[in-house]
Amino acid sequence: MNETIEDELTKKRNMLYYNQLVMNERKAKGSKGHRRAKKRGQSFGSQEVSFRDFLFIPEEWAAAFYVFYGVGVPYIAGAIFLFFFVAGGSYENFKLLNTNAFLVIWLIGYEIVAIFSLISQIIPYQIRQQAKLLYN
Image (cartoon, rainbow, N blue to C red; front, side):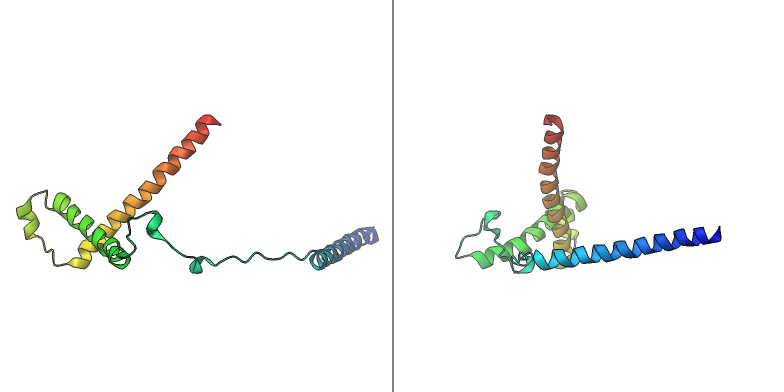
């Protein structure tokens, strides 16, 4: 009786080995005969980025507008936030704030601009998803 159990185990091991050999042969045949040309497009980092589709940027003033959009807009958003929410909309209280901390005001404004830009991307996506659910 022990021989039959050992024989069955040997058969199973042999079948596993045989199946692995067959699969390896099929992979080898498939890769030799059907070599696929890999699509090599531009890498993500080397693609050209143009903000002209999204922002108003005149051709001759491009550098100045990029600086304004990168530095000026977040700073102005941070100053407006400080004026309305920290100083309570009072110019006298706003004058008491330390507005010499350019980096802090810029960081506050940067976060506000980032939040608004994310929200402006999420809302249309949610509207499209709701429309798909309603009409499908």
